[in-house]
Length: 311
Image (tube, rainbow, N blue to C red; front, side, top):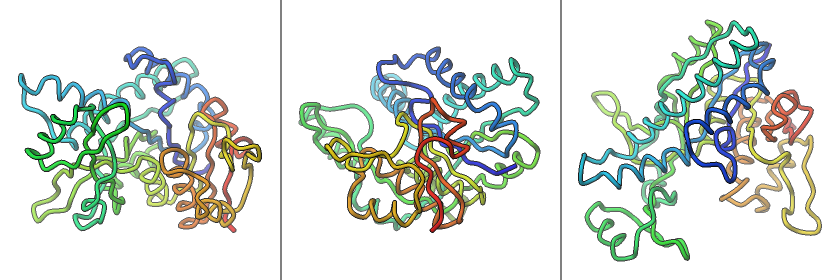
């Protein structure tokens, strides 16, 4: 039995062309758990997940209703997305466990991730969030709210927020307690809710923590033996889109880090995932994998996807 952190990519709930309805997300999540039944039964597993489309929808609803009900801060919208996705994943897992006679139950932990107020990311926000605005509206909102905004060519202007590094997981004791009780924790959704430490406890931070790096941090913090990112591609690809592109199978972390440092993996696509597995393997000496959700069990078992091992 191993302790394994499995990070669901966006396609665990929505695939290209899907409408973001509750019913479609529930079906996708059920399909995902169907592929992981034996892995979850036979190991200590923690599920983490992204929240990009869902929190984006919440922000749009926030914007549309701002003249009717007070808008909520970004960190609260992140918490709402954890609850929404958590319900979907719980209902999906329960349908799978009932159908397959699995005794293990699951529980969602609304998870806060500690960040540093002095993180340089707060001085240089780079993560686009929320709706697109026309130039005049974006500039006015930036003036009123102190936002930084940036144009996305052909689409409009969006708000930019900080993407700081995680430094602690506040709910770690609860996650460990669930694991020791034989329960499947669903935690650190969307990178966790960013919080600062204060004299009186914690306060929410309007930021977005990269979900892959947060999942890697979660896996390291829990001393997992394996960290797995399930996404919509079968392997990490070197020289993607060129005549010399090739799939990466099993390789040592030093080799993958060399490719990463050479700039082979763009920050807007595979970069954060590659960095996440590199950090986990270097910190823990465990193995990490990136692969397709369609072959989830094989990816977890190291039979499919890109497997990264210690040097």
